[in-house]
Length: 42
Image (cartoon, rainbow, N blue to C red):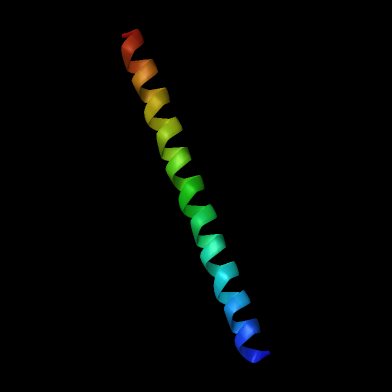
């Protein structure tokens, strides 16, 4: 039972890290795309 709780907590921690990483990657990608679009105007 204790191992199940530890595994669940570890899984939630990994899941939160993956969500933060994906969000960070998408934000940098959108920022890069926006800069490319603005630079193409000039």
